[in-house]
Amino acid sequence: MKLKVNAPLDPGFMPMAVVYRDFEAAVKAAGGEKLTIGLERNDGLTSVYTLEVFKDGTGHDKENCEFVERIVKTLLWTRGGYKLIIAGSPVVADYIKAAYSEGGSRDFDRVFMSEVYEAPFEVVAVPFAQAPVTKESASPVGRHLDGCRIGFDAGGSDRKVSSVVEGEATYSEEVVWFPKLQNDPQYHYEGIMDAMKTAASKMPRVDAIGVSTAGVVIGNRIMTSSLFLKVKNENPEAFEKVVKNIYTDIAKELGNVPIEVANDGDVTALAGAMDLGDTNVLGVAMGTSEAGGYVDGNGNITGWLNELAFVPADYNKDAMVDEWSGDYGCGVKYFSQDSVIKLAPAAGIKLDENASPAEKLKVVQKLMAEGDEGAAKIYETIGSYFGYAVAYYALFYDIKHVLLMGRVSSGEGGSILHKTAQKVLAEEFPELAAKITIHLPDESSRRVGQSIAAASLPNIG
Image (tube, rainbow, N blue to C red; front, side, top):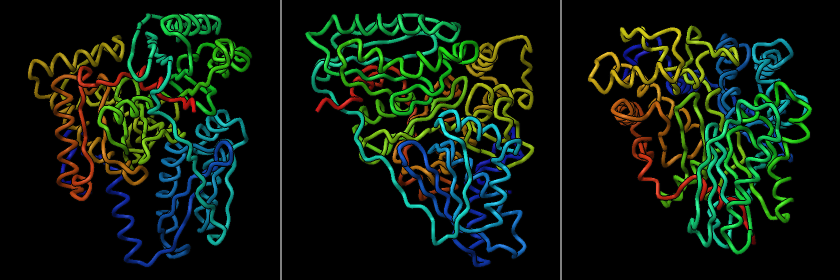
């Protein structure tokens, strides 16, 4: 595969955007047929995606199956869902059914989605004439700044809370806490309640509460989150009884005020959209993993999963495998500190095996600050990855702005990453370069904070 902007330390890189483009062209030349993928999630909401594939039995069945499996994987982790509907090719439908069966190649995804949506995962095959139709949520979330609001931002090392009166933060505080180390949900409950009561005491009343939190949120409930991982793993009964409804229970205790809880990636994208004064914003944070968030054309959060860490970035089957999901070529190994670490040997940089991932990243960042050529190649490679990933994400999101964030994007390395990603769009996808701007905001340039954006989530009517 010939790329216009190579990933210098990864010659085997096969970006999904280019694979998609080449597949589309080959199908068009051969004469294909339509295939629709539907994903049903909570409240009957359904996302639908239609593409052209080769006709069954024309010598391209394997190619069809392997390509569509990557598209299904992408849709599952961008949109979410517990029911997959394949309308069209019976051959592809059977392949997807096998992959998402118990013990199949995508068993991790099957189990994860079942737990998140509290429903058995299933794959249903139907004729193309019975393809599902789109049913998305149209309810606006965010950008509401009237009244007296609490904005709470739950992080892994600190929690932030703001009192927001008519859109202005009249009080903010940041408190260190250690949620990931605690298996007793009472620790979390008391910490959150203390923050809420403190913010409430700084205002004449509380009209609404907005929460930004790590994890998957469905209907204001915490379905899974790294903040409560020890509770879930060591005290699963308490996770079900206390954690899932922790925020709504606290809102009831504070006077049954309206509350909206959203994933922190989405709230970050919302904060960026409010800062830019625009819509169609995709936020990507490169840290311990790859976090994503999206604000649509109406300036709203969609309720989609946006778990970009599990979205394929590389079609090469020899690409690095994620230890947790057991899948290859996914974002977590391309847009996180893991990516920096995996590329270090090819850059001629030896890292201490006993050091933590964060410590290893700091070593590379220090070398970058000193002008090390190998370190620069690492960021150039990740920049190439990212430019092609943005082009791929644009197949599934309507994007005008991409916010590039997280500790991997900091410093001079982040500037190289940013510049290379822009070069990919300009040279490989000029039609996207004319439409999409990749931003590298520094913390001081964000006038609208995360907790204020969180406070804007609920509509108090």
